Image 1: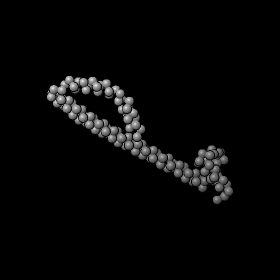
Image 2: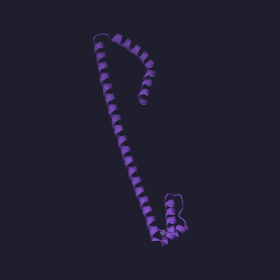
Image 3: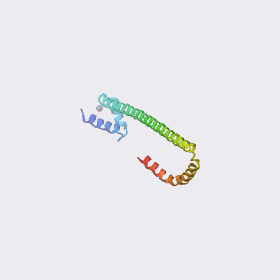
Image 4: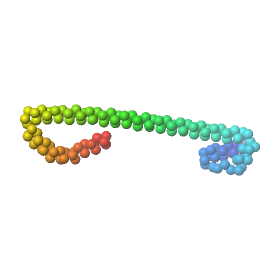
Length: 138
Ligand SMILES: [Zn+2]
């Protein structure tokens, strides 16, 4: 390999890495020298393959990301359904206990208890919000 080829191929490497722009001198040499043209084509081929490789990875990441999002949505939905079921079971239990107590003749006390609860529950709201925020942080 002559010094001229060596210099041109070094320049081509710089062009490949974007550290230098393709000069007229290099272009003229490429037109006349098959050895350096081949070297340049190899660089271009590597570049093309790297680009393909990059795209592949990007697509994979998108698919993986979508799968993760989908599974977290399903998990969230399952949790919501579970919460709803628990709520339904607990509230129907409470309602049937209340109905039983009223049926047994304690209606007046139930109303008193309800009034007390209605006064006390708003006091609990800040604590419930705090609990909720702590759950979300986890
Ligand atoms: Zn050459």
